[in-house]
Length: 215
Image 1 (cartoon, rainbow, N blue to C red):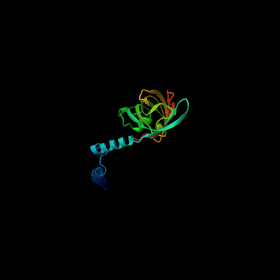
Image 2: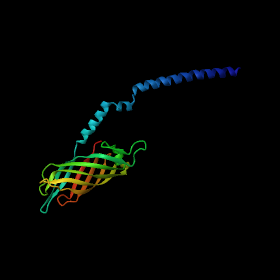
Image 3: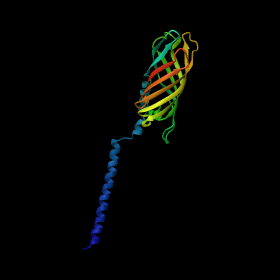
Image 4: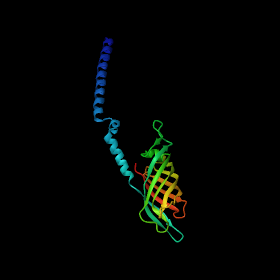
């Protein structure tokens, strides 16, 4: 029996079916690419970017509920108010080496609660006049805050420590600014936080805030 003939025949058959398999794979990849368009291309469309930033800006207008101590020598109470969160600059200590460690305004939440340092601004508005203190209803604070991850790289729990200055006026619109320090606990991927401020002023010693940060 001529085994050489069978070996040659097997080689021809294998090459034939291998060629078919390669052609089928090429056709399949071309068809699949049609069903699954390039996401990066779609994300770079001007309309998509406009919608992304418009939605983000809209979410930033949602305030965080806060309580401010209103006190003097004769009495003390809590005054309800609203607080907004703005982050002009954030530096992440755990950013991927392929991307920048710095972000402006629109900060990736993983970068924030995973360990970062940021500059922040907080416009605040009390819903009613302060009865005991002489402070005005509007306040604007700016300062520095750091985030430290505690559980699951900060996704479940992270803590924050910061310091800030309050650009505040009294009811006669005279300067009544003061310094504050803050400490916070953040959970639910950094969206929900509980923050306590200690103020270096006799008119309002502390603030309590439920921080809502939408990304």
